[in-house]
Image (tube, rainbow, N blue to C red; front, side):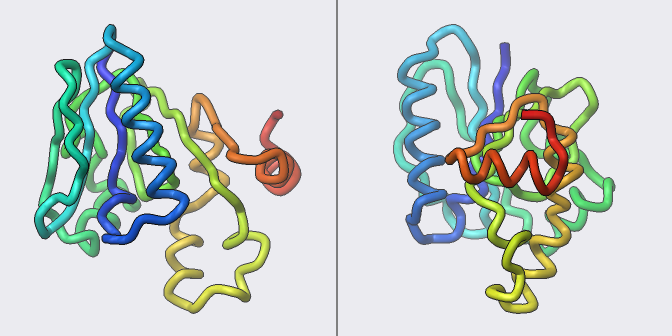
Length: 165
């Protein structure tokens, strides 16, 4: 099976909780799973600052498209993520980002928290617009598997978006 891991959250240049989760998830999946083929998708106009993932069953696929072009192309359906990352059976998104997938690509989505939805007043206008465009509800409905990093986040997903537990 071919599995793509979306590593775009690593392009921020900082390492926080989300980036640590992304790095640890990727490192451990590659170390433990020798049966599947992995594509590590990364988009950065600059040089990729990825750790050395030296595993026989993985390869990095980097694009250098400015996010101001890539994100609207995905959001508004002009392109599919597979157009850049290549076709795969599963897309693992360790953090919600703009995406548009073929219907036959399965999606595993991690939600870290819903603070932008629950407390939008704590975000500047740019972040509010970004999180509104992420369209949490439709992203969650599209996902085949949802990972919530806490029981609180799980309960928020169920309560706010009426997603089955």
